Length: 207
Image 1 (cartoon, rainbow, N blue to C red):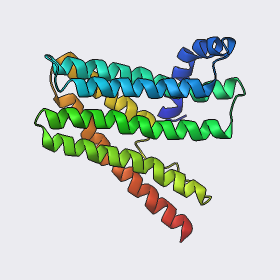
Image 2: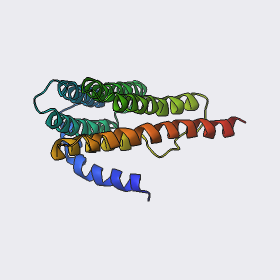
Image 3: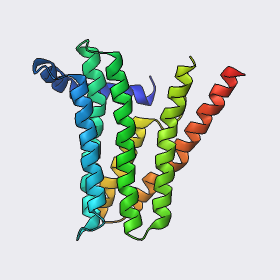
């Protein structure tokens, strides 16, 4: 059992009671997916608002917490679909589409805050993190459209969400911008590395 499988099972133990409650309330996976997207938009709003707030780093911390909670909804939609036998082709498409939007708005919110605060270099690094995050998913989707297996890599979406949320929350708790800067730098490097590694992986399969 690898670390991702271990963490997934641990999280499932926590959310399974919520899943059962959602099934009893006839809540669909698509609604849960959309709720997670709304949470990401709310987090992005807090990041942007930090540019004009009196205590901006506290707003970043709250944004990180909202981002983490929204990430749980991203896990619950798939779990709800499997447990409730509610999976559909449109649901998978809807989930993937809103996941991309979620990453775009959350990282864009941080970039806006950094640029507005005069940290242009870190704003650019955040944009690189955004590009890498989107390309990781795009390369996999394009590969799978060609019938290839492309799940390789070291920084997939769950890890990116947790890393970004943790960096934001630590920034708010410590009152220091360093944690969020470290988080976006790691994502910028490893997400782009994963995207290019997936390209190489597909090249070897197609060669």
